[in-house]
Length: 354
Length: 213
Image (cartoon, rainbow over all chains, first blue to last red; front, side):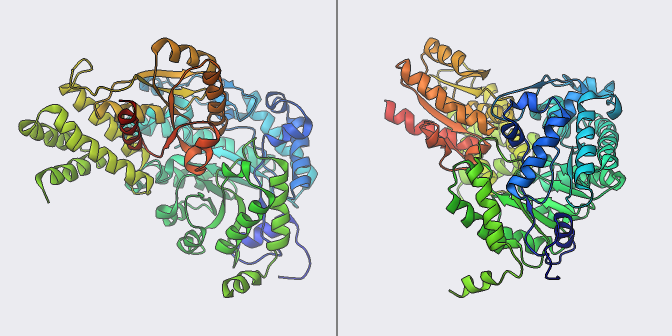
């Protein structure tokens, strides 16, 4: 490490190489907070790529995060499939009516084309403009929901579990269709300027399905899909547990895994064994009522648990900071990284000696 | 190991490996020795409680909890139909998803409750205003609320305030992901208790039943 401060891209690439950068990269994955910055509703904010570009640039500066996160909302993907979205004033919009109402619908379902979808093209335009603003200095982390998790939005969780266990042929057909869509969507975002794809795959978490089933389903889907994405990927389990499948996740070819606040970062780091960089695991739900002092304690705890030797990105554990988390907490997280996140992290040994 | 404990273990293993044929067989064998309500209380409820505990500890997955609940609900329905007088005498109860579009948690709790001999209304998804009306109409004593999203969890506070304003005395039991990640949240929103798993709901409501009688 040289003595010069790194830019966000250098900092991130260094930690992904399991080396120590100048300081712990902060990946504050804020989406809706851009609407607060622009003083408009969430619905209006996401109606225009210009709003999201402006919001993301303001958030980048304000919170001193090391990435841009042009995710609009998860349901934008099924919006493209025709399900519509239901907005609310205090959180991300939900998916509307499932596009798959009964399993037989899988026989005839067709994926949308990215370049024919107005909602997806708003994201593409956002990424292009962000790329023109920051060039190669700040990673732009785009999101694609995994083909294996997308059916929760396409048909509902309950119906999807039944599909997984009881309709293997239709499950396979849906995966083929979804894989092609996810690859097209991810590669369009990469082509627009995204640095990496966050592959949102919470259904693969052992919180949701047993490992044996994951190895036969979600892992196979991930291996096939990630191999066709033209850029690096980070798998996110959106608060789900991961420790018992970390080596299996590494086998899919992903570089990063988003980990849960329910698990111990030091143990996860050991399990990852330098095959994966960890992203996490600040508790986004508790965060809404943290004080600045608590934020500092939590940041220190996470850094002490997993930051030494690189291979660590500090962020929340879900992959999206809730709307209810106040500014002073997010600012306090940035302050704590400034104070405690500079390598070498000798303070950890000093505190251990006390 | 006693015969009952052995049966619970075998039943639980069959459920968590999703072996419905085996689970049915164990259930039917138990019915040869005891009446349905005893089998439910001695075999089904403890097995579901153990499975819920295993999920909390990360040893089992949500899909297994869901399928186990469905299997047990079917078995219990077969021998204890809703009108059966052996179904538990209980406070009038309902389960609802409050202004949220994620139904799986509610479905799991509903199945586990019914598989444990309880009867309850399934309100589906409702907003605060509609829910207050139904609670009054149905004269509920216990309401279970399942949420996945933090904003929905925070709306429980509005519900509690609306119920207080309307002078309705009701116990509220909450569950779902936001409560697992913030152990203080259920108090913040004015609930009376929080269940970490579906099987927690059984224990909490049984405690309330004793308090109410």
